[in-house]
Length: 246
Image 1 (cartoon, rainbow, N blue to C red):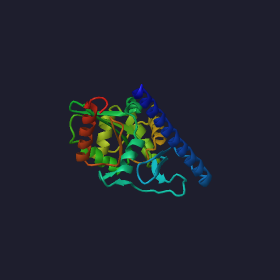
Image 2: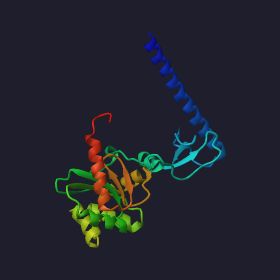
Image 3: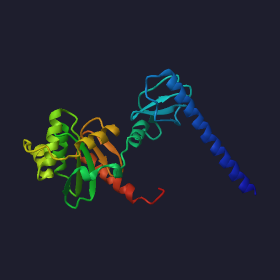
Image 4: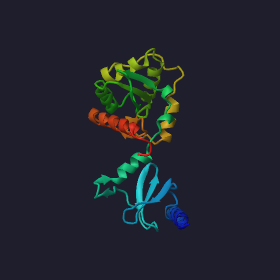
């Protein structure tokens, strides 16, 4: 009975703590709405273990405040015990895009080797950084690349993206243009997924190209080096093979 009573008391305490934290979060949201009436409502507010700060997530960005919303701090929290950038780690969580949510059937699929390692990339045909990334990826083996045509740089990008999709061999046309600077020509009047991918990217706050999505949902903005891509693949593999609950 004593153990049962202890467990019951512990459950009550945890529930009360959760309710208290939610009450704080609701109060902060209300205070922010009062003080910043023209700003969008935060997507989430939660207490951090750092100096009484509360984390605010809004528009894919992270800010901090106190329990009375007296101020807003824009910047990184660094845990000096672990040397981890806590804000960057949370940003990766906040901005994850679930792999199953990607319209891979509407992407240009390029396979090298056995294709077991997978990434999806939002790319614009006029993006210089995308071209650099595609050239670097030529040396990566056992990979499947799903190119999501995301023409955000100019109207010409839209025309080129549609012409690539309408070509007889999309993968070849894409790589010829991005890797070998071959001009794009041909019909662009077929039915394409460009508008749908643009809408998806905007909804997921994809603001630039290239943006890389790994199978674990982590997104990386920009053309990162191949060494970093290989590290991410290794991390994804380790996480996928870890025992449940670890």
